[in-house]
Length: 370
Image 1 (cartoon, helix red, strand yellow):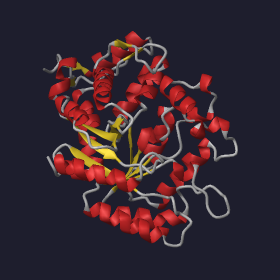
Image 2: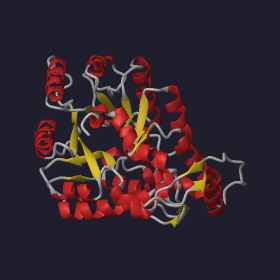
Image 3: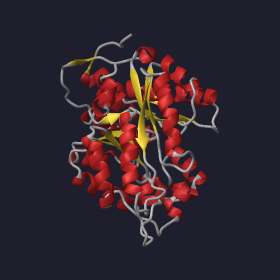
């Protein structure tokens, strides 16, 4: 059931007042409607960033109960070969054709071999024929991959131009997890959110503070930006808030510069919450201004090392916290952020875009399969 119809000014003033940020503003007199906590299961939603590398129905049934569909994203990580991930994805899509979509990926294992580019192009063409609606490029480009001279290969390297051109030609979306959160270049005790502290403590190979000889955070972002400059028409979704999670101002600059770019929120909503602790209004205004460029995603997943029952339980709890953050103006405390903050109390129209309509826009096959 929809919450009471409120004025636009009610949302802004209530949030600002509770958070102690800013003075009352003159607002439009247009009535705006809002969702409540009770609306969560009845609203159609799409989670654009999960990872399912083993066939499982428990996690998917939890998503169905919470009115979610999924994009399962293959990734060129060392855990599971990309072709094995794709086989699982194809089985999921066949079994749950109305609920699951998949993003392909390509391996850079034999990058320096003469036949790598042709093999990669052929693999991606087969992925598109099999139903892939996106292709993900991963942080190993820029953070691990080296050429024959031992130099790091960045995403703006000309060798990737042919691959990106193929993706664009086939009307496929390019997802880019390039670089890491800026926290990765800080000592663990100086990181801003608990999720990053936990991840980088467990993965020192990606904790760039320990590897000053690697490309810098700025190097990663600049290479991604140069790639987008070369390919102004590629439909691009920057995974994890485009690795600009630490500043809505910096993210806004890229969204202004690259109209072909959107971002998913996978495992970075806590960074919005962290910034809301000290400047609720800035985060709220960012979400309103860029409401057409923000896509809901969470980065949960099921693999051979995880219990799908536990994954589903934790995911459900996480999804409810996110819903509360976007739809209410309540005072909140979440596991990944040390201090309290207020929810964003976004209008229904904005919530619908974040949770579904933007995914349908940036991954068009979703909209065509309603």
